[in-house]
Length: 431
Length: 185
Figure 1 (tube, rainbow over the protein chains, first blue to last red):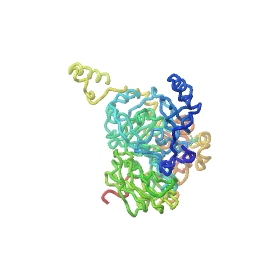
Figure 2 (tube, chains in turn yellow, green):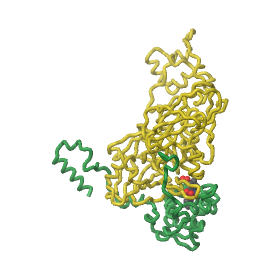
Figure 3 (cartoon, chains in turn red, yellow):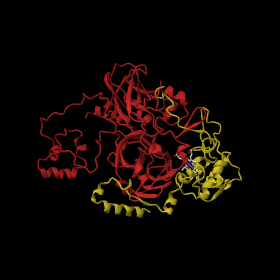
Figure 4 (cartoon, rainbow over the protein chains, first blue to last red):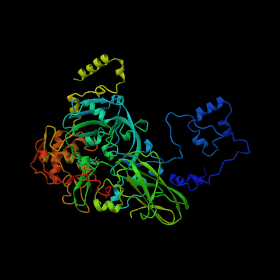
């Protein structure tokens, strides 16, 4: 890579503005240098010995400036790492981190980039010591080890998890700069676990068991009450994410997943399920995660994430450097089911075109949309709106605020507008 | 009881023969997990419901609560509960319908039991679950007193706490969505 290319941010590389400028390495006319000769020794033994000594440096450090076809590469590793050229990272605050949506492809969020939200840190839990207690209005209170939970029939599915505080600052105006800062509290993973219904059947529901309190074993002992009849069909007790055990920040070794529900209901580090007759009214369902309306009343138990979408390329903080073809890309999702359709506008909502949806299109999952666009160098306001399988259409900011005012901190799903100026700079605006 | 049903399953297996090894489950059950003892349940069963269910024995006064608060809470929530830097616990009454609502225990919280539950499980932030029930009753009393919801002479225990009348008790409504762009509208 040339110096020029190395200065590019991942965003710029993604926009492909310089993809034709990289010089091609040609076969040297001079003999190879001593260093290249050593590492490229023809004796098999020599190669192996050099690899043992140089393993940490090979591939990455040794090959960066050279021709990778002339130098043996790095050896196999036990647990893979991404290329050192890739820098996408979460944007962190002590109790949350945001997914770099602008750097992702397809619909799955790499586990290491899945957003985090915790209320008093990520606990370190020995899975051998962890237990799940199921009690309250049950016939038999039961304790399960993680090993026992893994013995139940397993289920895997993809699902997004979105914090209901995602985009929350936007209620008060266009506060955030990048798509990561504004909308990065949503991610999609494949989750594997046992159906909640199977585990509850073991304990046997007693009459009157209509709600379930889920509690985590973190320092916040996070708790939420959930209406049983609404969650039983789909809820999973998950021990794995994207094919491997959950990441610590995703609830290792056990978390609840209620597909489509606001993230805080998917209690992490799950240690207790208590069957009850009515909600426990914990702090996280009264003081927090409730929405204040203009008349001073507050909405409670706002569980399903309503349809939402956002254009991730081009998005806030990026810059279009050349006129011409741009593939507009983004993500859409709905907690009520499948994404039916995504429409995109480049003129601030006057005209809409239907975007292509990339397979797979799964219920309660991020869905990738794309649309061809030719930027002519003029000003533009890019927007996307999601229509889900229930027929619900993602509202404009004006429609949303008219009904709910601006004092709700949670559940903001208005259409995002990105303004592009004549220099190609992309900015968060509200129109 | 569990032993009996396991025995039943064993008998059935013997009676029905090898074909039964393919059954998805026995009577819809998998016979995993073990019965939790009352002590195991009690050790973790810390939640407190609005009717007072789950409140432990013990009691506390406003005066005792002031001392608990000064020692364990004031550093983060401020000397009188309004100074911060951590969330304001006091004040804000009458602001919920304004342009600058201040949501506190006094102005926003619908149940006094929630305050006990939350402090007992999660505060003080740096040493959660370190306070005794007695200390939690006391500091709960002090925060409610600061918000004008309790008399200075009040004593809180499992009988009196659920009876504290919170200002915003009827302020919460169930989720009415879809409220914007209803399908078909």
